[in-house]
Image 1 (cartoon, rainbow, N blue to C red):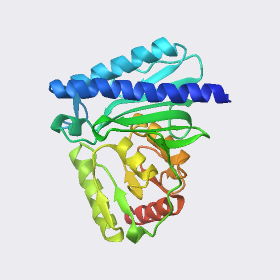
Image 2: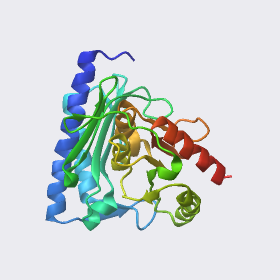
Image 3: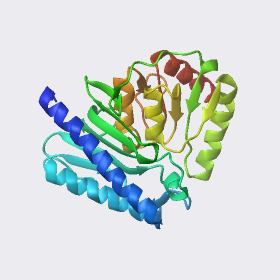
Image 4: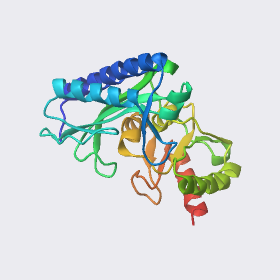
Length: 271
């Protein structure tokens, strides 16, 4: 799909408006107290009333402003669209952090042309709002990535031994055990590893140079859509292993050289 500069700017502004508006709702609900309403992959993989309320708000706002667009969200049913565009939304990325009052959680909103799948999508605009960090990262295809109003510059690559690397873990015990084995093999090869609890925030921290790289297995499209665009427009890359696109199998992000070195190491230790 060919998107005009005017459409791209409209989508960019709307993605930021939606992410910040939803984050404001989530923060107010957090101040009032968190109610856990369901679990997903395990007893520790929670859904809160705020997750559901925020996604409902996002869906209603998108339906009002862009009624022909599709919607893919974490907590609700997919909505097919007629325009060729789909909004990919995560109402609260980092729900356990949200439950415990840790600051690394965010609302992630992106819009893509084509199927809302990492191997096939064409990301057009996106925003990640982390209200407890007082930060919104946002990007538009061909127009750059920003932290607030500051444009992000490409992050220089570093040797793997000097890289501060983010990662995350699933909430299913046997998957976590496998991920622990991988971390055990990666840790001696890097400067250090951080586990902050929100993939969308981690990707944006790669984009703004706070982290050198990030890797994680098990991520869904709504976890990474906006963050992938922010990384790419900041001059970095996001891919899987063996030259594959990012997927649930693996997501690796960083400056091109750093991501390539990390992916090669992950390929070696995963054999």
